[in-house]
Image 1 (cartoon, rainbow, N blue to C red):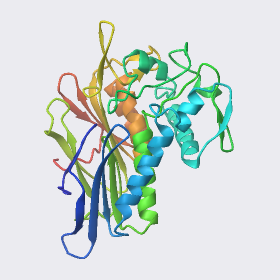
Image 2: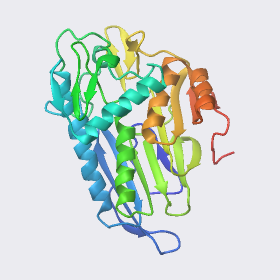
Image 3: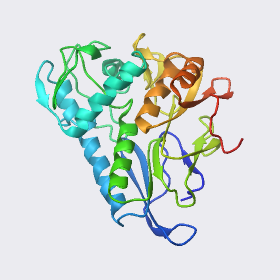
Amino acid sequence: MNYESLSVTEDAVLGGIHAAMSSDDGQLPVHSSSLRVMGTGANITTVGGPTDLPRRIENLLHTLNQRWSRFIEDSELSTLNNAPGVTHPVSEETLRLFQEMARGFSLTDGQFDPTVLPALIAEGYSHSLVNPELKTRIPAGSPARGNFSRITVDGQKVTLPAGTTVDSGGLGKGLAADMAIELAMSCGALGALVEIGGDVRVAGLSPRSDRWRLGIEDPHESGKRRDVVEIRHQGLATSTITKRRFTAGDRDTHHIINPETRHSSQSDTVQASVIAATAVEAEIWTKVAFVRGSSELLRQAQRKGFHAACVLESGEWITSSGWPSANA
């Protein structure tokens, strides 16, 4: 694995399990692992800390997938989706998922809306891409968009109103990366990187410096890097409409839904990358480029203090002011 420039994009898979390695000065042990989880590839690197730390992180990621997946019939999310009006106790992890959903909905004025699951299914994304035998199950007749403001969270109990179902796909990978980093640092790691399907969170020391050097893949040419950035204690999320494509009737569709039209979003953006304080925040903000266009994402980046970059349909690469490109 090349720690100097890790290429990240949706569905990136960056090598198998690695034995313990050392940083350049020979002092700090580096441990890495790769796995499949949440329907995509994931990569873990820890600097210092227990030798089994990557395995502990893997276990956490599998637990989160078991609780949040809409393709697992008895997951906490599926249970809530199929019991409208019924109050259910949830785990601390799922409670945090709903808290982040609420924050994302508020931050973006509803441009990020996790209640468009029925619309996503109608656009063709009903079955797991990893195991097509797994199918999303929701109540018949669910409207294309639910009412997020009517979801009730009371302590550690959640109630979804009739006509509202939710999907974790718009922020789950970023939140999982954040929670994995929190675990790594609490266990004594001096630095860590967790990447899940193009959503990355880093903290502390990289194997070679105090910054992590990450490549962003070109959406039109697999394996080619569009840019390289250097970040520390931040999250990087990249979303693209070139990977998960479907067909609905005579229409070509994808997995990012415009909450207003209830259909696959249409904008000038093919791929959006955001660098923010956390991976979940970065993942949430990428959706704005597909719903409202690249100019709105860059405007919000200036207002809210994060960094953004987009690949447009024309092939042009545009960035917000201060984008931390290592190629500059």
